[in-house]
Image (cartoon, rainbow, N blue to C red; front, side, top):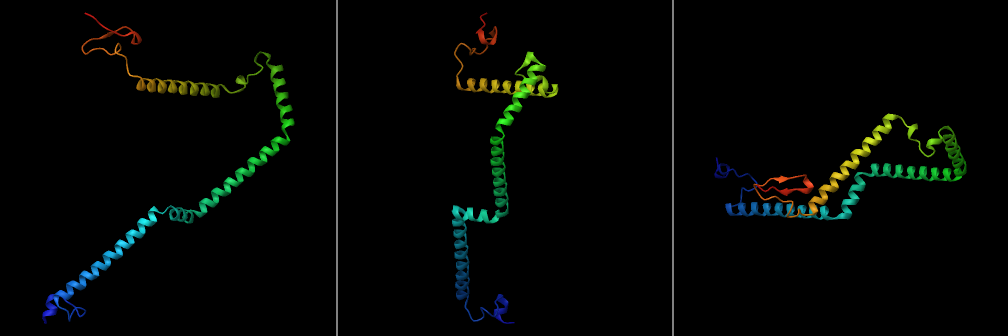
Length: 176
């Protein structure tokens, strides 16, 4: 066995000294590092380039965008058609609504403007429960917002160790 085979060198570096091999390896590593840095710089530029990102997103989602555009056009055409039809039949619809109002007034003269009794009880109950819940929630949120914005007054804060007497809105420190 030769000395080159013991060092693990191959026929590529057979005629080179150790220094030349190290320099060749360093050059190769330097070239790879430069290529990696160039690739990272290219990716950074693409990541911050808005035009490239938009163009890439459009190319990637072209089918979805075409379908969404088609749906938007169809909805616009249907809306325009409905408004055109309604404007053409406005007088007819107005007379129809008036006839219904006269019929309701004739059948129930005590509730001329109301249709509440025509709805099922479950729907009316559900509507009222939702209104109660929403108004309670809005009141609680408003109270909390006001309490967080307005600092408590000195009278309402009890010193440590003293109990407050009376209703909450008239709380005064207890005197022993």
